[in-house]
Image 1 (tube, rainbow, N blue to C red):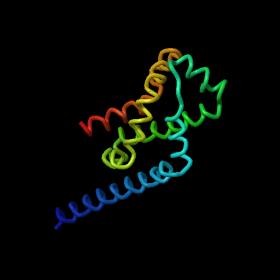
Image 2 (cartoon, one colour):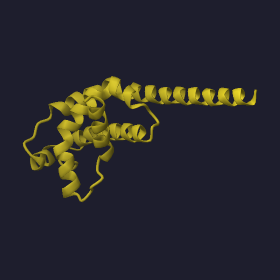
Image 3 (tube, one colour):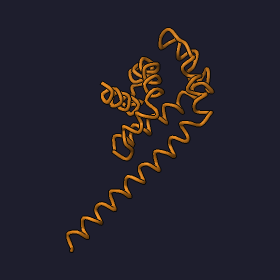
Image 4 (cartoon, one colour):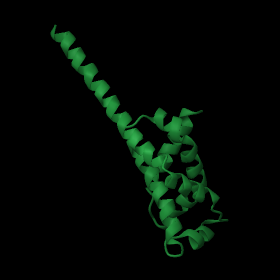
Length: 142
């Protein structure tokens, strides 16, 4: 009887943890699916530059604080998702199923800029969880 009760408690806790993970993910998904987030993502995808210097001149924090804030906000969102996936607080397959397109397109567009930021600003860990998330999704789909 004690063993059965212990197993029941373990199963109940596992189910409760899965429910909390799902609730957390859906809160994040609500922000992701918000019209403003989607509009900002499409805006970021429409930006054009030849190299880091042109990017920084056109969209850097001093010359274009509004666009820079939009880019940083998206990066911050994906950074948070990456940390939560790494810590196994949300399921990577849920992220992949519902967000992978924007995660992949964002990283592939911003990667050259981010790599240059890491070097130029001597900030090697800049957007590390964006990169981690991108690579985890790519691994899942290969």
